[in-house]
Image 1 (tube, rainbow, N blue to C red):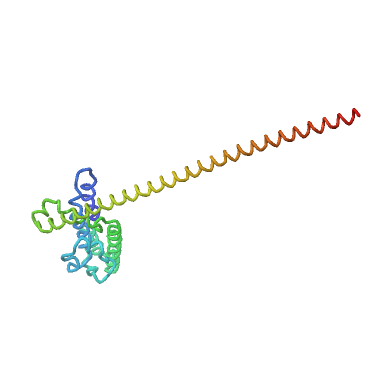
Image 2 (image 1 turned 120 degrees about the vertical axis):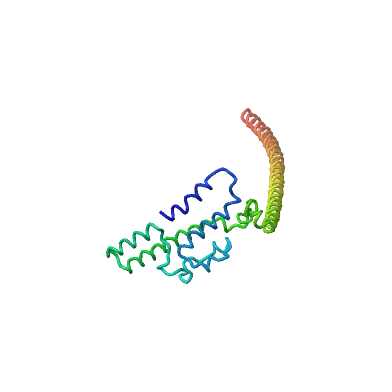
Length: 226
């Protein structure tokens, strides 16, 4: 329940069409830190950057606090103490429960790290539009805004180059297609001429054959008459 209460406000706030992206990096960083403070040593999290937070190896047991110091929530702590007081569970069971809680929190953090937008520079840099950041660290905001503008210009340059390449490729394809069409037209003209010549030769051959046949018939008739 404690972990659910940690995530619920974040999910509620960011599931909106409102322009809340400038607050994403800061709030997501605090969300992850809030969960990590339950089982990770303070010195590990001290001055940790959002990018370092995403790359943090939470499975490293050297960075964990003692199992007795793991924060499993007030409700769970109260219940554990009550069960121990009633002699229903021992110290070993409590430690195993705390260890299981750490494993669950590690898995949750690793899932968040894997899908975290904090990995992308633009998400971290757009925090410069957060009014609280403008007041607390104006130099960082100016530097981040400069990087955002440079990134935007570079992206526009890449898009322009891509469009030019597409246009050039289309022109080449069009030229190749036009050449193919012209080649087909030439072949068609040649084929038409060849067919015409063939028809003419056939007519000439047919005419000669008819004349020869008439001559033979006349000769045969003459011989019969004799």
